[in-house]
Image (cartoon, rainbow, N blue to C red):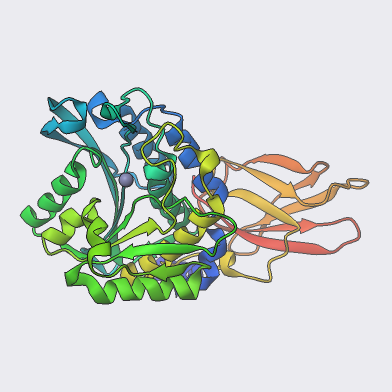
Length: 413
Ligand SMILES: [Zn+2]
């Protein structure tokens, strides 16, 4: 009994030193905020053709739910709520029906009851002004890339990074996508009310609504709409822009800031919850039209906004890193194992395209024992890890001539 306990302690301490829980630095992770994955989400959302809430957005909510579940947020739910609303731009018709928020939580390791919310509305609208007829609603075509697939894409990008790099927040992070914003901020109102009813301790609510319009020939700029109960938070968000992105922040003053009431964060602010609201400074020409498309979006810019969001999450939720391998900046780019953590299968990619002689791949367990060896004769080689037990491994690539590179992976079967 005593002996087995002893070896148990040795294993635990070895794993802890290998994984080394460390406070992560925002700057180290900014390169991982990526415009390609942001682009993918925005394109997927645009491809729904319309996301006009009264037409029913359950399938859109299901898509977002699946994306979050894929990034390890297994508790993500579709939180439906009933809306009854007279819609002026639809000939004052009464809409009655369900709308669909998406909500997932990443548990806080230290303060499970302190909540940081990052949210964006998922619905869209196409409302064209006609000088003779006034606003004409097109229910069938509202691609909403900028408004607001861009905000949803940032929220999902944060989930992707936390998952891929094993970041664990000390405070809980709630990932939110709101429905029915365009017909009256219903999704935000519903969630904000729920927070009050349930006595949630919300540290801050971060809202991104329209964050992809930025002309290439002008300096990157963003509006941070601020609320009376969260002025220091807005100033801090501005500091994060200056420190971690190429974006110049603008905090609109006085009457210019009436737009702060035009998105979901307003519903939280009204209930006393601190909120910040990011919106592009160069307002899109395609607002609420069929041309609000990815091809008119600046993904580089969304990526920069994403970096600011990451900095805010790290500030308010405080990430710890559990996988030191990924932070090694000296890591050679000569090969990669993807995905990492590995589940069942992974692909080893070698950056070289010359295979005159085979490369040797070796895999060692946490005790340094060789447990797998193979020859690689092509750039991409799928490897079956399903027989491996879960844990930390070191992958070693020996190139012809003897030089070698190593990398840590986690297998989580
Ligand atoms: Zn919007």
